[in-house]
Image (cartoon, rainbow, N blue to C red; front, side, top):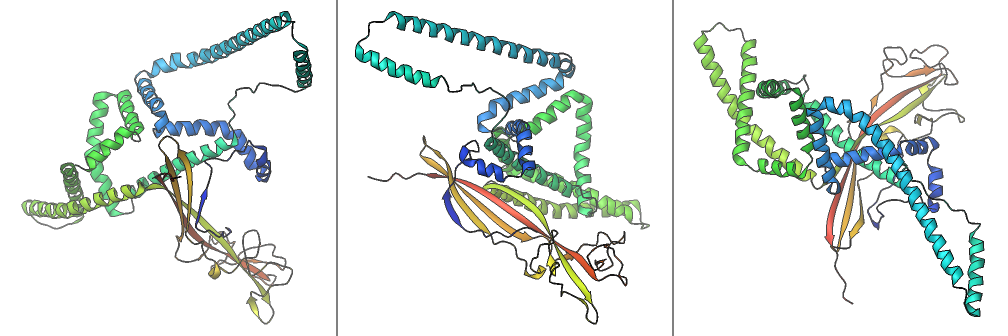
Length: 475
């Protein structure tokens, strides 16, 4: 069961990252479970590359050139796939070998140049042997210091693909934010593809009615490679600043909005009316049937157009609200176990033996309050200042809002094992006097029982970043 933590309003200075390479944080590393720490260490290079790829996909400000080059690589790969597969892989192997060979040669040449320069300096110091006594004493001190330095171990830190733990934590944050965004888009797509709802089916059929003929014509005219290049480029450009400018311009175009709303309204009206008329079995003339169909289409289209315009306005307001900061949502399922013991003459009760589990426990048999007394943490607001811009005299204020809410209206009994006979029709699981041999049937040898209560909760975290001008104090 999740532990409730006290959360309060606080304003504090927080560094942009924690430096786990500092010896002061060795105790923090020791507190991390070994499996988790090994997982982070082993996958740190992979997470680093994944985070850099996500930066390219999202067109970060410092990687826009690389994002554009990646777009060109995708287009050329789609257009010349055979050439990439035939010559690209051998070229990559040869490039790796040549780079390693040249790096060794360059390192060796630099080391030889340093040795020659050191020898010349030693020769020059030997020729200048007319120093004063004071200088001789100072030279003796320096020689003593040099002798002490001879026993100090020296190594050159090799360049490898390993990254520090603080960089890995930053990469994990980047990957988590991107995965949350992808999951949210996927959930929205699945909602629009829900075949159990009539309005969703009508909307999908309307979209296919417009998009399917255009898609078939493009595939026939352009070919598979060009279509893949175009579709991949559009997906890649969806995060770019240019795409954002085009999207804002199209959203503010009133004529385009009403035109799309009209097309969508008539498409929905035609599909819905056709499906409804196919289900009717009335014996009427064809002319009367067509007239009734046209009247139904016009009436439905008028209603759908106003509704579509309202939906477009709502989506725009929602997008403007989402621009205030990043929003992440997580669902947690809490499980509590209700335990009871059978006593002669009393029947089932929550009075337990002193040495056994309590009437309410979690999955690890730790005692907890009853489910009616379980409360979610209060909403919290945490504010801290990060990344002060020295050139613009600005500092960024980050505010994190955390809100807990229940997804389920009330606690519900887990009936997962009812079909297999592990629980009865009320969710109880019966056992012997030692809470062993649990099954879903009560017999003369059963003296204990338990059942699992579940309830899901949602944690919504919104991070808002605001830039503030730093006011200079008069001295």
